[in-house]
Image 1 (cartoon, rainbow, N blue to C red):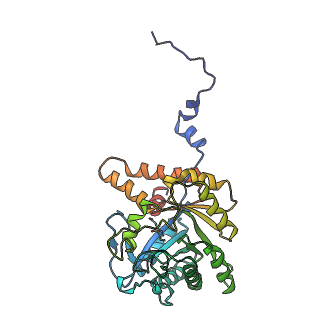
Image 2: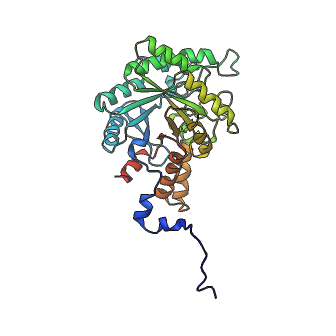
Image 3: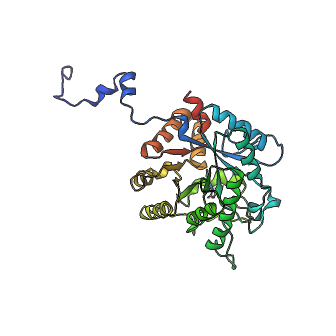
Length: 336
Ligand code: PBG
């Protein structure tokens, strides 16, 4: 008979899981709306919101609608947005020149949001991919064979100053060129923007999970048929030591916040970098991570809300102070 079987145990972890209040008392990681940064895609004109096929619930918004969305996010306690422009193909060229236009869509969007919701932190990507016909984050070398590092950095620091002048709180270089954080810091300071911060995409892997984002901004395979290959600048997913090296460089070059991207597949990296810098760590739950959860939920294979919550809790538990996620608004709503 096993009826009266009793283990001789002093340690019974289940005691603290017995009731909801005990479980709440010993909860180690808690998500709050201020943990999240909401990425928003902005389009030209007064167009109606455009759904993005691979990102259920995410839509490209005209500036007016983006402002409304920012007001709603701020009301829900989300403190920051990351704005991304989707340009008309006719504005793109090999050099990404539209990135340096004083009248660029992104600059008008930043000004409108900062005017309407000044308390909301606004950040923008510093990289050329929404602007180039080939979809790369920088300009190509003479022979077209690779992305030219220093020439790209030269353009990026000019772009960063334009964004600072439009009023962003943080510029976010997402290009993975060598030396860009230091160059951008110096350019911002020289232009009088020593209070504009840098959130560096420090550890950005050449991931297969950016596909839906590239659909959203129209950079997927802009120049032709071959899918984009960014492996000469984005990192090899196999590399952990190199992640630390990239992080330490951006830290030393003056980044204010250091980012790991993607997030969910790189929790070990988030944990590790958390220990090597005293600065805030951000993690980007990228479009493919979002799409994956939605796709499974649509098929009835996962429950959306609990899977979403767990994915974000894991990123915070790993050590991220901030999470860029397309679930930002849903989470803020769920946490009310
Ligand atoms: C562009 C950029 C990318 C993302 C953010 N900024 C894509 C890329 O590097 O190709 C990805 C975000 C996402 O997938 O959600 N530099």
